[in-house]
Image (tube, rainbow, N blue to C red; front, top):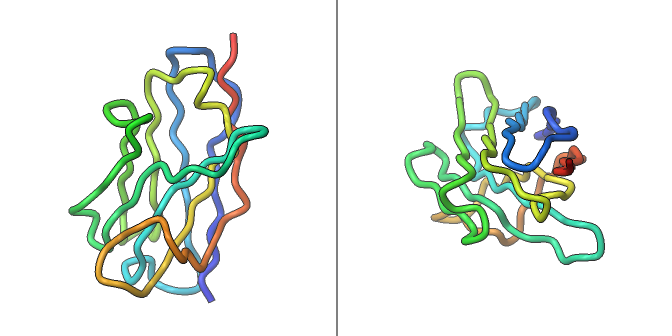
Length: 123
């Protein structure tokens, strides 16, 4: 059973940066697509980034493109979400998710979820 534990959330000022980490245990992360989601208060959940199993292909939501970078280190069984130039509208709970099946990463049918750290962007 794959387990995902995120860390790195907190309070940051607009324009600042944060890096979220997602450590996996139980199974090798290299066998899973990884997607980051976020959910802001009162809003629907949004797919932020999707990484292929090797990390060679990454897709981003338009709202974060150019500011967020998702990477993975399969040797450390950990994935990361580097968030730069943060805006107030980036305030949300961020979830790391994983799925083993399929031929490409997508935001659907993610079978494993972390509990999600809160990221608050405020002055």
